[in-house]
Each structure stands twice: as structure tokens, then as C-alpha cells.
Length: 28
Image 1: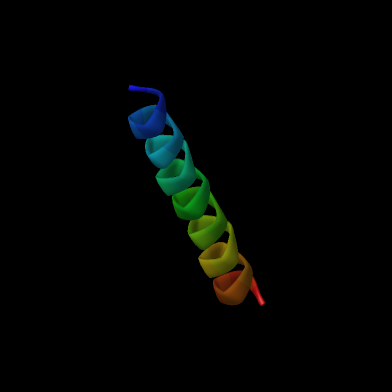
Image 2: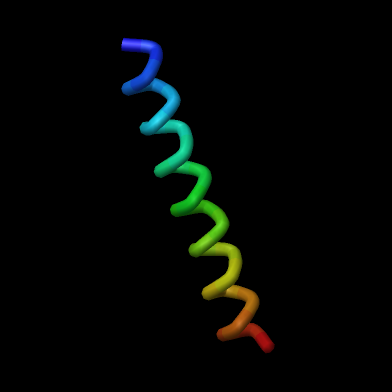
């Protein structure tokens, strides 16, 4: 369960970073 939680957190973090990067690129 802990491993699944960690993987899910990594996926969420990656999604947030990707969204921020895309917004930055579009905004730029």
C-alpha cells in the first residue's frame, strides 16, 4: 500500500509539473 501511495504521489507530481510547464510554454 505504501508503495502504491508513493507511485501515485509521483504521478500526481509529474502531472502538476507537466501542467505548469505547458502553461509556462503557452504563456511564453
